[in-house]
Length: 262
Image (cartoon, rainbow, N blue to C red):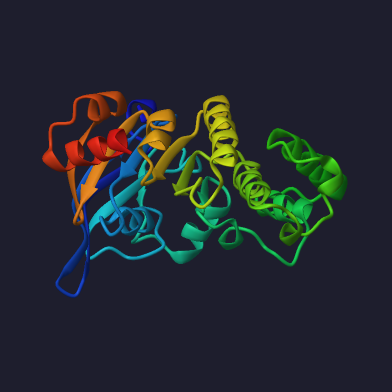
């Protein structure tokens, strides 16, 4: 049965840039409601892997299989061999992508409400009153005052822009969300508030998430499982607490010790 199969299956994924491997022979399964964290220093291949999985760049080898809710038989589609219109459809309905810089994930020339409403229209909602009402509910869920619904994102603080980007992605009730350093570049106090919000929303909605972060504290708080990357390879993986509390690979040990010493 479909329920006994992963939502996402990454099989032997590799991406080369000339002779350099952005990611190399990465495989894992992601189950509904599970959050997997991908950690490592800058240049380890985290973002390359994330963008390959999300269909944003084409891998050199390997497959990404996704089980869409639209397929009644539960059969998986091969993300990279699927037609471009299907990938676009998935990205605006069943998937979300939260960028580190919210300006990359928001339409800056339209209001906060329109940023959320656009996603709703993408899944077929057309009644203006219903769209606006749901946008208002989501502004409240991400702790943005309803009076800001007609304001442009540029008038928001960085933390508010990130919360608006989260609302834009989650309003369509996606099954799978990709997050690329979602708390990067924010002040510590703003990060803490955003992490609490993300933890609450992902749990409430039962989201499957692929999370890229260099921050082990973020990974510990959000991720059920962890993959540690170095030079494009996954050098260690397992349950988050096990990996961080009892790291086996020397590179993971170095990462953890650097945080403790800091």
